[in-house]
Structures are given as C-alpha cells and as structure tokens.
Length: 232
Image (tube, rainbow, N blue to C red; front, side):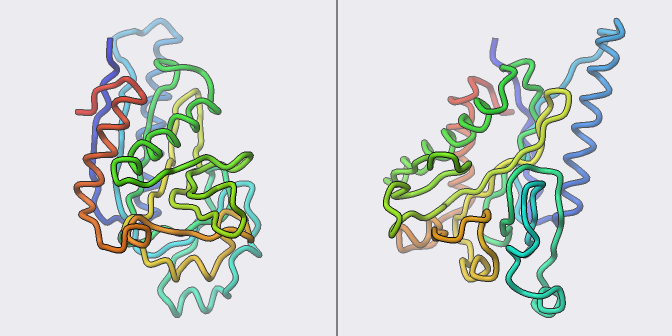
C-alpha cells in the first residue's frame, strides 16, 4: 500500500521559521511513536513534504567549518544575508530566491531504516527531475548532492545541495535545487566545503528563466516514483 505524504508549500519563509516548523512536525511524530511503543496505537505518524523559498541565508551544517564563510558578520549584515548554524549534516550552503528547498518529514520506519539509501533516493528524485529538462544529473563519489559533469574536475558543478537530520527514524531538512538562483551568493562561501568545484542552476544550464511552479510539479511526480508514495 502506498504511503501518503502531505504536501505543504510554505512559499517564501524566513529560514528560522521554517526550521521551527519542521522541528514541530518531527517532534509531533516522535511523540506519536513513543505512544505507539507504550501500547497506545490510536494515532499514527504522518509524512510531510514541505516546499519553500528562503530570503538570502547561509546555513552551516554540523560538520561545517565557519571559515568557509568568506565574508565577515558585519558584511553579512550589510548585505542583509542571514546566517544559521544548523543541526543538519553537511557543510555551508546558500538558500535564496529562485531556489526550490524541499524538506521531507518522513517516518523512515514505514519505508526503510537506511539513511544512506534515503540520501541516494533524494538524489535520484533530483536526477530524474533534471532529466525532464534534458540535463544529466550525477552523483559525485563521497559527496552528497547532485552534480553535472561530476568526473571532470574542470567542469564539475553542483546544482543541488543536500543535508538531513534523522531522529527516531524521522527525517527533517532536505535538498536545495538551484532553479533561477542568483549564483553570485555562492562566491562568498566555500559551497559545501568543496573549494575546487563550481555551482550552477537550471537557468544557467538552459540559458533561460524557468517556471518554478512547473519544476515543483516535476519534483512531486519524481518523488512519488522514487519513494513509491502518493503526495496529497
């Protein structure tokens, strides 16, 4: 039987608000799992897929280094760029307008208990989405996310960053797909802590601005295929 995943498009939302929103959903599911473990089976966990866009913000993951932000906190404030140290995996990345950020809040016990497989599945969603636009997305060995020309050091460029957290097998955080993103923001950081590779977007690769709502529809279709679920 297909798992049902509730879609909620939050629109443009400040990063801290979205983080709190995710955390509340995770904690609610975690509380339900505790009740189930104690014999109360009246409730069940709910899967969610959140879409949003953030005002300009740099976020640093648990394994990140603060020196990968190449400008001062004063300069960040002057440019009106927020900064957060988060509890997701990964290093430093940028979120901003023209980017689709996806936060799946899934109870992996209803899918599989395997974080590595979960990350590869998220990558597959992006790879299949890019294929709809004639772009060959690829994995890069030892690096989470989706790349183009990943084996060519001179040309390798990242189009989608990923970082997740999992508690009681419930996920949060997720992926950031550059659609019409202003890539200049990535020059002020060492993206994902990888100094020798570039960052790109659908707009840059295709030479035109894309309809973000259409890209979301493609993402939803591919998410349903990869996770064998129904997004409602």
